[in-house]
Amino acid sequence: MAYIGRRGLLAGAAGLLAATGGAAPARAARRRAPRAKAAAEFRAMWIASVENVDWPSESGLGAGEQRDELIRLLDAAVERRLNAVILQVRPAADAMWPGAREPWSQWLTGEQGEDPGWDPLGTAVAEAHARGLELHAWFNPYRVANHTDPGRLAEGHPARRNPDWTVAYNKKLYYNPGLPEVRAFVQEAMLDAVSRYEVDGVHWDDYFYPYPVAGEEFDDADAYERHGGGFASRADWRRANTDALVREMSARVRTVRPSARFGISPFAVWRNSERDPLGSPTQAGVETYDDLYADTRKWVREGWIDYIVPQVYWQIGHPTADYAKVVPWWAQTVAGTDVALYVGEALYRCDRSSATAAWRDPQELSRHLTFARDYPEVRGHVYFSAKQVVADPNGAMARVVADHYPTAVPPR
Image (cartoon, rainbow, N blue to C red; front, side, top):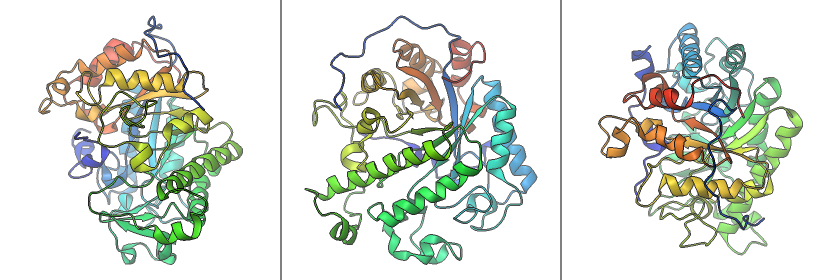
């Protein structure tokens, strides 16, 4: 199955903002009576900073321009009657706040380690709260760089000081999830921000072990030799590494900032049902359990996370991953737990020039919300990404607001 995800947005995506100003429950998820339109729900958008996808619109803008662009995005969220933003503040082993354990992000100034002259995260928290928005800080745990040369990293970068912490894969550099010292460090790097800023959430997306590339092996053989004793396979060991990161971070967030919620936005297919009877009725080419070593279902069932936002980036009726089948599977998965389910929505695919007829129809996204309302486990939706919330190229976001967001509501 061809999957067009966030990774496909990184090339040529910048500039638009500037231009536009246990066990599963035995019961199956059932169709429900619609809840009231004005009921509290989570309405959010992702603001991606890596490769300047959403913000800043380009690297090298002045501090005032960067701040103004961020404010415009927050104002757009309010105008669309959203109540939360998920801001990427550690896109690649870097930081968008001062005094961090890693260098300033290159996506601010164009030069990793260069001070942009202001505090983006601090400003974002204050300005979001002033507008009645929650601010969830979005971190990427293991991505180091979109290249493989440690010498290009800022002087003093932890990955440059500790090259044995990294693995080069698919023309990118990653921290090795199999090293306990790496797992401890990345948590400290993220918790630095959580401890200093009144963030409402700590958010991760779908990058744990990298997406597989045919003919290339993620070289963690040495780490497996040293730390993989007692596991039946390298795959089991990798999953245990990811489990440990999630479990440990969950406990630490609850200690450092008890008011903040911990959420993860994974690729939406845990396993296909043809491989595992507990899996979803899909035929996806990627399964998080087997390919990303991310047991997303387990994290829900164990209560290690407060919310989950599966990226259900397919239309209703998709032949191999139907929105109308994936969402009920997730509703069943969270049922009986304290984990909130929000659905990740592919606003970026809503385009008049899309090769898929469904995405050319401005009603498609609104139909998603109408469908999901029949499942009380679905407590909201998150839109990828902010620049499409602003530009709304085929009117899909405006249709969602008109049909489903008649008034502003608090997050749920």
